[in-house]
Image 1 (tube, rainbow, N blue to C red):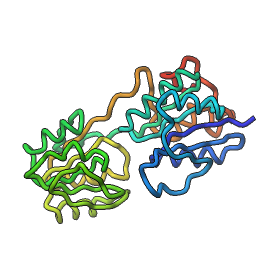
Image 2 (cartoon, helix red, strand yellow):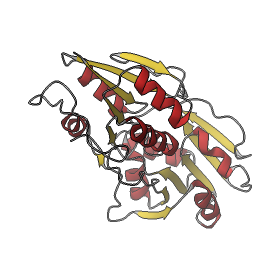
Image 3 (cartoon, rainbow, N blue to C red):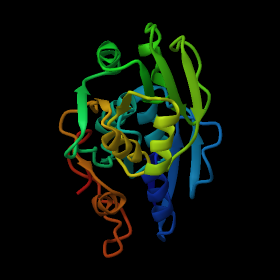
Length: 265
């Protein structure tokens, strides 16, 4: 009998995990995407696109499709999805693993200003600079839409939509990025402050190194907390171990006792 693993995706780690799972005999993997990116690229295994209808809808889907384990490998700031996954797991008894790449850590020479939210970042910005490199994603621009007197350079994978700041330039690009490239971009646009979420990972970390070398302040939006009792694993290998699907483990996930906040053993 095969094991069915649902991967809540949209990240590099989710893609890597789906590839690993699809290669294992006796494992069926379904990756679920929110559908916010028009061309997400090919994925191994089955793919579904769109929401579930909150935690109740996800719970129904888990039952209907006989899912044995869920891996929440969404973006660290996809707070509502993570919350719904925890609630659906509690309702169904399906174990959930939260796969989260480690956050960034400041290094000597960094001028970081940690804040709790995009709104807090917007409030702080006018005291730090006038030309802003905003890398928080196109869906978060509304928090900065009221700011006049600042020029924003926004980088996103796809074109942003209103509401957004009135004085804005858009750079369409997908990582990974390099330190020379980021340094050149910051210089070409005369950036004097950077805003980023603490997404973690190497693909977009070069901007932090470039900002450090240029002595620029960086506003860092902290990650939202995980649901109560949830424990995150830092990489694909650790997620496979939690599922009992590392190369030296049996080929079937072992459900964790407990529920939503529990992870697989």
